[in-house]
Length: 424
Ligand code: HMG
Image (cartoon, rainbow, N blue to C red; front, side):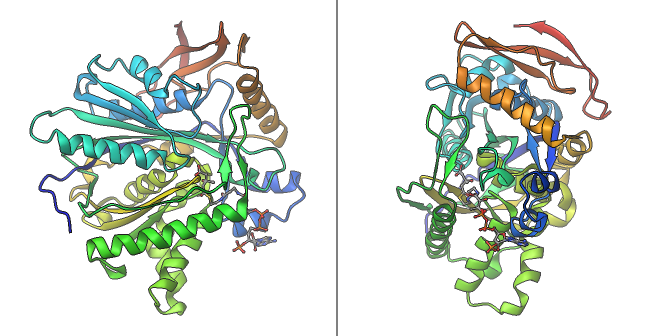
């Protein structure tokens, strides 16, 4: 067993909730599908829909700016910025570069994106943790990690009800007040699989659904075995078990697979699932798949609803990225809920949302896809989404244009008036 003295992990966490959503019953009606397939078969309720003025950069900025404000962080505190994303906006320039400028981070801050489908968020977290460990005692600056994604499949495709969007921003440091990672040896499994991919010329993902489910479960079985042998821990050592959530029923499939491997009492499967995993899925059911951010959305949801009742608990975390790379790791929730209480922002974000009609969903996504396909010289005049801090205005002279929106909203007041302030 490999032990390290310094503990690193998540010091702070905040979530950005996009403004618009589609109800899965609306989609089921339009697709002439029994709603029970989406609600019970896949386990979802609604999914977030990005507006044309939103992209993975604006979602990331909104999450990161909220984090900086709610935790009173200063840009000079940040020495590393890593963005995990599947939905990069440029073949070369990372989202981290845009974010670095928008947040006003110092010039001596390292910036880069990680890409490995949904594993990107975990790749970013692991990089940041190693960075903190390597600098332990020398550099008191912190790492900012943002997982940001918009999941889009073709209209009418099997994956359409599993779409979604969100961004989760986290501070990784050696003061892990939210979640301290446990220093066990890496439990990783990689295998090249063609289960989910998005060619450069497409704005929607392609997927072989059944292959992807099998690859997810295969990675889980391998990493769980590696994790157990490396840590000496087993089922009873965990209070909570979180999973990457492409759709909520997938977390159930993952849980069931581990439960069966552990040969536990089948009659208690659902009860165990409810207390260890389902309690953290309420936000995933509302937002849909947000790829790199999905696992961290579950963690944030567990903390936000759990408050004092979750302090000190051990959380098992399974991260899967198509392609594929999987990792099982664990952490202990911090001893004091004031480290995250009223700072994460999921419930207030959900309260501000607006439901879309099916037609509005179609036109919104068509506008987004036009922009991402045409590439150059496209500008749109879509007003910023109420409450949005930065607005994506389109692409001019082959460059993405963002304009700042001065949000009048104070975090505590929950009012969401905003006004256009300046073009960049
Ligand atoms: P499908 O093939 O249309 O659905 O798409 P299905 O026929 O398999 O039905 C789904 C479930 O609904 C089944 O339950 C049905 O029985 C049930 P299960 O057998 O699985 O327990 N069902 C009903 N239940 C109640 N009433 C009804 C009814 N009808 C059916 N009337 C699929 C499903 C997941 C394949 C599709 O949504 C898809 O392609 N999704 C995208 C891919 C995906 O999410 N894969 C998950 C693993 S890979 C991953 O997690 C990585 C990923 O996040 C990307 C990344 O890494 O970045 C995707």
